[in-house]
Image (cartoon, rainbow over all chains, first blue to last red):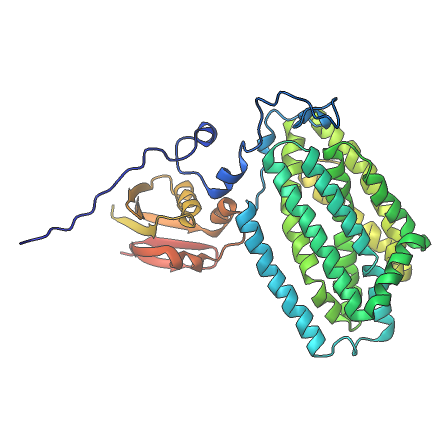
Length: 330
Length: 89
C-alpha cells in the first residue's frame, strides 16, 4: 500500500475582527492592533455616571483637545499588556542585578560621604514626585478617551510607581530608613522642594486629562529626567566617583529614553490634527514648562550649586528644540 | 532577470518584517504557504533595519531575522543596517 503525504492548505475564513478590517483592510492584524483599537465601548451606554452626571462614562469632551479619531494616538512602542509586562520584567531583572552588584561589592561604603549626601538629597524626595506622576497618569487613564491612549497612560502610571520604589530602595541602601524619613521631611518642609511639590499638587486638581498629560509627561518629565538623571546622576555624580548611583538609576534613564518616543508621538499627532489643538498644546506646554523649570532650579542647585542656572537653561533649550520637532513651538 | 527569495516562518514575529520587506521592495511577490511565507523579488531584495523598527516599534538587530528564517536564495550582503540579496554575476 502506498501512502501519499500531501500538504493541504486551509485558508482561514476571516483574517481578523471586523472592526480592525474596517480600519486596516482585510488582512491579519497584529496583537497590538487587536488589543488596542476600538476596545473602549462607544455605544449603548445609557446612563450617566451617578458620581458625575455632567459627563458621560467615556467622554471625549472632558478635554479641550478635539480629535476626529482618538485612536490616531497610537503608541510607537506598540505596548499592550503582554509585551509591556515582558519588557518591564526584563528591565526589572537588570535593575535587580544592579542593586545586587552594588550591595555585594560594598560599593556604597566606597562612596565619598558628600556625594552620597547629594544623591540622597536629590533623589530620595523625588519618590514623592514619582508617586504624584502615578496619580496623574491614573487620572488620565480614567478620564481620557480611547483605549489606545489610556492603556499607555496606565502603563506609564505603573512605571512611575516602579520608579518611586527604585528610589525608595536606593534611599534604604544608601542611608537606611532615616533616608526615607529625611526625604519626606525635605519634601514637606525644605524650601528648595516646595515649588516642585506645589507643581505636583496643583496637577492633582487639573481636570483636563490632556492638560495633565502635558503638565506631567511632557513638561515636568521632559525637564526633570534629563536634568536629574542625565546631568546630575550620570554627569556630575559619576565623574566625581559615584558611578554606583548611576547604576542604581539605570532604569530611570532607559525608561525616559523609551517613553519619550511615545509622548512625542502623542503630542505630534494631536498637534497635527488641527490649528485649534496646536494652539492649546502650545499654551499648555509653555505655561507648564516655565513652571517646571522654575520648580526644578532649587533642586538642581543642591547638586550643581552655581552651575545650576546654566544647566537648567540648557535643558530648557533642549526641551524647546525637542518640542519644535514635533510641531509645538514655544 | 533572475529572482531572489527569502522564506520566513509565518508567525506573530515575522508579520511586521514581511510588511517592512514589502514596503521596501515594491516589486515583491508574497506567497503565503501553510506556516511559511516566501517572498520573491526580481533582481535584488533589500531588508532595512529602520523600516522593520518602524513596524515593530522597538530596536531591532537584523540578526534576529535568523530566528524565523527558513531559507533564502541569492548572494547575501549584510551589515548592521541592511540585508541585501542579489545574484552577483
